[in-house]
Length: 292
Image (tube, rainbow, N blue to C red):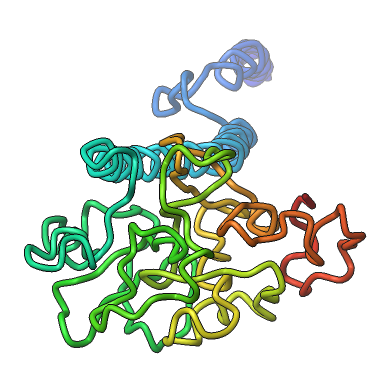
C-alpha cells in the first residue's frame, strides 16, 4: 500500500513538472518560420502602392513622349523654314515658283521631297496612305505614282513655295498669291504645316471636316474645302507650322481660320469667334477645342 502511494506521488510530481514545461514548448518559435518575411496583408499593401504609382506615372511618361515628338516635329519644320528662307533671300525676298526655275525644277515641292526621307517628317505620322484616302492623326500622305515621295507636311498653295503641281497650274488669279517674304503681317502667313496632303489653297469660307477621318477625303487639292487637310489633330488639338517670318508656332485647329493664308483671306471670317462662331456650331469632334 505504501509503495503504491509513493509511486502515485512521483507520478503527480512528474505531471506537475511536465505542465510547467509545456508552456515553454508552446511559446517557442518554429525554426522553419522566417521572422523577416512579409505577411499577406503587407504584400497586398506593397502591390497596391506599386499599382497606384504606375497609374500615376504612365500618363506622365506618355505626355513626356508626346512632347518629345512635338519638339522633333518643330525642329523638322525649322529645317524646312531655313530651306525656304535661303531660296527667298537669294531672290530679293521672293519665294520662287516653277515659272522662274522650270529648267532645274528646284522650286518644285517634289524636288524637296526627293532629298528628304520619311524619317525627316513628323514622328507622330507613323503610317502612309494614298492622297485619295482618308486622314487621321497618325497618317502621312504619299504619291502613288512616286511611292518614294511621302510626307506629313503640306504647303500653303497661295505662296509660290508651291508651284501648282506637276502640271504647273496656278491656284487662281496672280493677285491672290503672296509673292514676297517682306509682305506686311508675314508672321501670320503660313508656308508649311502639319497636313494630310502635300498642299492646299484654304479660303475663309472652307468648312471644317465633319469627322476626324474627313480631313483628307478630297485628293484634288485646291478645289473645295482646302483647309481640311491641315485640320489634323496630330498633336492633340494642335498642329505645327512655319510662317513667312520663319517662326515656328503651335496652332490650335480652330486657329487655322484666323491665319492669313492669302492676301484675300478674311481672318475674321465666318468660322472665327470675331464673327460670332460658337463652340456648339463646330463639328462634335472639335467642340471641346479652344476657340479663336
